[in-house]
Length: 145
Image 1 (cartoon, rainbow, N blue to C red):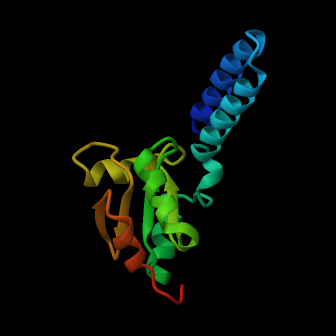
Image 2 (cartoon, helix red, strand yellow; image 1 turned 60 degrees about the vertical axis):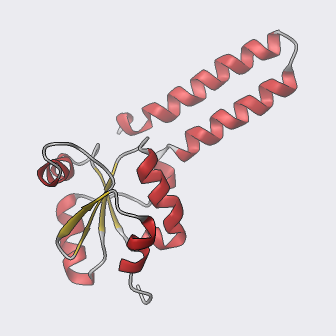
């Protein structure tokens, strides 16, 4: 659990240290603006931005039942973030698996990516797609879902 928050915590800590230095040097306005940027970056890279993750087996079971894609991701991945943002509200229609929290998910990603944990890996109808175009993923989501 803590591993998923490390990047966010480091961003807030670094932002706080730099902002403290700016305050002591007489630039409280710059310090506030910089701290806000670091907090926003921390929020974007936190697990809060992504829909609730589930386990690989549960995601595969649900996908079999409803036909929705399974998205394997990890916090801090800029490509996962790009996919999440470009999907918008429709991202909740996918089944999200955080490979840092689910060893079976990490193994599934390595199995289809030559041993690498390359994310996002999106599985649609049993076929894996590594780092697909977000527009293509949106097309895979049924309008009624």
